[in-house]
Length: 356
Ligand SMILES: [Zn+2]
Ligand SMILES: [Zn+2]
Image 1: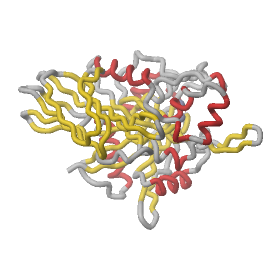
Image 2 (image 1 turned 45 degrees about the vertical axis):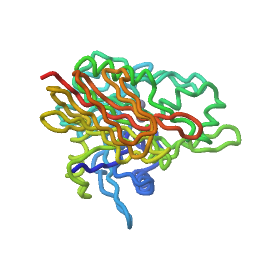
Image 3 (image 1 turned 90 degrees about the horizontal axis):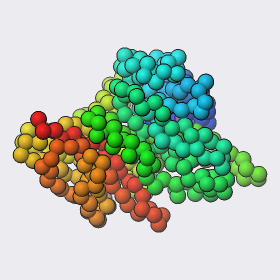
Image 4 (image 1 turned 180 degrees about the vertical axis):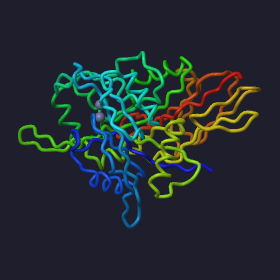
């Protein structure tokens, strides 16, 4: 039996450049119906604040990781999200490989934050993409980052104001360059876990007489979430739940869901071969062929992708099956219309099919 938990990650607080405190973030998460949040402030790991928050109906887990980058570097590229290391790692910021090694040594997970993050000259924001591609041993990458996508669309200050008022217009899909890079890394034979992040800051802005919070936390928590698949339901115990969630993230038993157009809860991507059935993040041996089964929470456009290329597409379906006779890295993308545009809705982690 599989149990699903909804996680919102990559969140900032006043410990770096975010606006909400932990309790405000937890209240926003409780109101949004998600199960857990991971706060990652810039170059500071905050100890002793992880806890289970509860109201009359719900509970939410709050974990703290860290977003590490070298502040002396210009521009300040190579941002790394670290979860579960339980120690300060900012001292290694200038050496990405050493940083990853130290995080691994501490039992942590590492995700490349906003791997492609183009400059937005209209709002004086530099390019802060990941640059050091010689790295090894990291867990995965942030496939869909709300803020990078926002930045990529800011052709003028007018766009910034427009999106501040109509934030639901912004998210269309992960940036193409990020998807391409992920496929490239997967093709090299590595297992790279994709997550979706908010990069939530909730900052109030003032332009002339206009005052507006760009992407309130409450809004982020209803948008791009990482859904993890667990063998047992969450218990509301900090230690056990944290371990279950981090283990699912480590293995890639997860998908990225844009929950605003319609809930993505219930999506499943399974593969069955002679030795049994596996889910996303897992491996399977080809033998005589395998059958993929894709379940969508509601009918949509579904694309099966092998080694970076679409091999099958379904429209208006909520159950899709396909037989494969070749080894490769298989993953699923799902699209649906929302507010007049075709939007990315669900991005699965891969199933790795090998010949032996
Ligand atoms: Zn960053
Ligand atoms: Zn950030």
